[in-house]
Length: 142
Image (cartoon, rainbow, N blue to C red):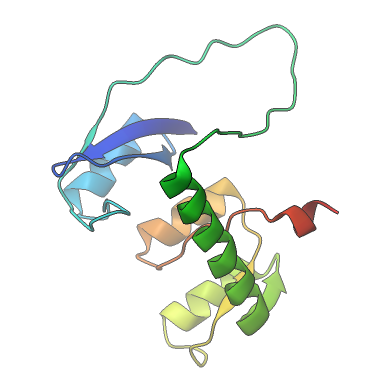
């Protein structure tokens, strides 16, 4: 798996995970890439700093210091995640299977959430299943 820094033609920067560099090219060619800010399908790789591996493994935690607008966006993301969890069905590790059933009309459409590996997420996206990550909430850590 590789994470690319991406930029749309409107100047929005974002990141996305791909199986390999060819996977990015395939998804771009098929029109699967879309800017999460404006919906533009004109997405290119942006310059990114290389990640240097060290001899010691350590757990990493994503952290940021933001301005008021960024804090407001994060608060809205957390609110959205809480609402999804409140109104959706937790299907746990069955998420990929249930998402496909809904996508292909094998079961009634409903809101679901759960767990999936990076490989499973990649497969769902390649099939055109519309999914999105949920941010971790502080209460999830307890």
